[in-house]
Amino acid sequence: MANKFKSISLIGIGMVAGVAASLQFSAIAQKVTGAPLPLAELRQLSDVFGLIKTDYVESVDDKKLVTDAIAGMVSSLDPHSVYLDKRAFREMRDTVAGKFVGIGVEVSAEDGYIKVVSPIEDTPAFKAGIKAGDLITRIDGTPIKGMNLDESVKKMRGEPGSKVTLTLSRKDEDKPLTMTITRQEIRVQSVKGKIIEPGYAWLRISQFQEPTLDDMVKKINELYAKEPKLKGLVLDLRNDPGGVVPGAIGVSAAFLPRDAAVVSTNGQLASAKETFYARPEFYAPGGKGDPLAKLPAGVKDVPIVVLVNAGSASASEIVAGALQDYQRATIMGTQTFGKGSVQTLRQLTADTAVKITTARYYTPKNRSIQARGIVPDLMVDETAEGDGLNSLRMRESDLQKHLGNDKDPAAEAAEQKALNARRDSLEEEQRLIALSRKIKPVEFGTKDDFQLTQALNHFKGLPVQLSKAEPKEAPGAASGETKSDSKLDSKPDAKAGDKPAKPGDKSTDKPANKPSDKPLQLPKPKPEAAAPQPSPTQPAAQ
Image 1 (cartoon, rainbow, N blue to C red):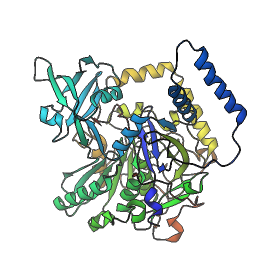
Image 2 (image 1 turned 90 degrees about the horizontal axis):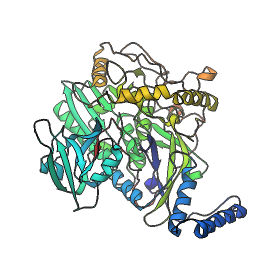
Image 3 (image 1 turned 135 degrees about the vertical axis):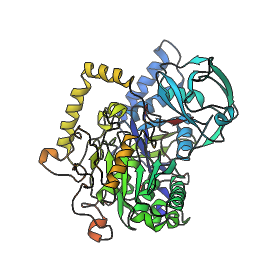
Image 4 (image 1 turned 180 degrees about the horizontal axis):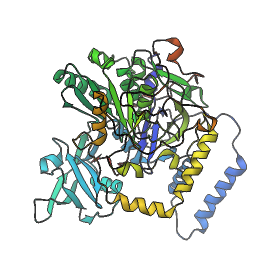
């Protein structure tokens, strides 16, 4: 069993268009099965290749033509299937390992510039004297006003030992500051936490990476050392784009009974059909022991509020869905991204690969969140005035060629029709763009964090200021079916869902109509995620 689960996939998000992505590694050689190759169509492809080589106005490199053909073929399938060139493949591996080469700052977009949210301690940026609040106006002399945040991030990253020159604007300085900084490998901390007031703790997971589970165990132990009698824990998954599946299973298992079903997958391949449980072989493959054994016993019973928003995707949706299905936590915030598909990584060469969608995944109650997301038990906007920048986010259902929700295709089609109508409104789009320029990102975990304040109110039995907006139409509504994650309650202490599930009971350990999934195959390289791109409201590490 242990060897079998060495190769578990991951689920992550790449925000090229707000897209969530997950993957798993497999061997290079794949046997061709099924129908014979379409020779006539392949000859046509060969003819077009030859035509471009002989007739195009300029000479085109053979390798470029072939790789572009592969990239186009794969990307035509759905938003998450993609060809990974050498750079993309390397960045993906580094990201899931919790590292990158850069200067060591967390940044976000503000007024067309890049704002430093925080320098990471003991990094080149920290040592050079970069401060939180600094605005980066130029990178290597190039003005960046209006530049895409992702593009700016790439300019600050590079090879170890290389240099980058930043021009900064600082409130206390009359003149711009210029700093030349040497890049180095930076280790990212994906888990943060603190006691926000006596009896209540805040635990944030910004992304599910390979070290995340160990880091979470360490942080929870630190919190309990400071506050042995916790009365409430806020698990913050807002803007968490996903990551490795073992991390999502492990985080869920930390708060659920052993052997509880966490997530299941279903696809054409036999290896894409399995249910994953809250057991060490699923979240700590390789026989290295159980990291959760070090947790204090109180985590199994402490009241939990999980904060989510439209930037919570994939692996973070797995955690939210599992804790919601077992009524282990109250889910609070806004409807999540809605990525319920799994991608498998097929390596082509030593440094290139194709990532292709191979399965859908389901919550313990066999709910599909594809193109729908998790609807919170308590809908709470990002600010007291409304949902802020979160309302401008793109979700899975906004993406062209996204997979439908197989649990209720008719309802998903109706939702997509409504989304298309909204997207076609140029006037509304212009209004949202203008609005986004006036809204400042919320800094999570601070005294100004409105949703965190509402989570504390929920723990204390105080009124929670709920959102006036209704969740987007969920699959099942067309047939009158009621889903456990779409029930809202105006009472602060009410929870959504049916009769509480008992994970220890055989009848509730497995989803109804279990897809009978096996974990997707991963070779010796550890599970990896596509490198998430920073979103306008989420700090990105450089």
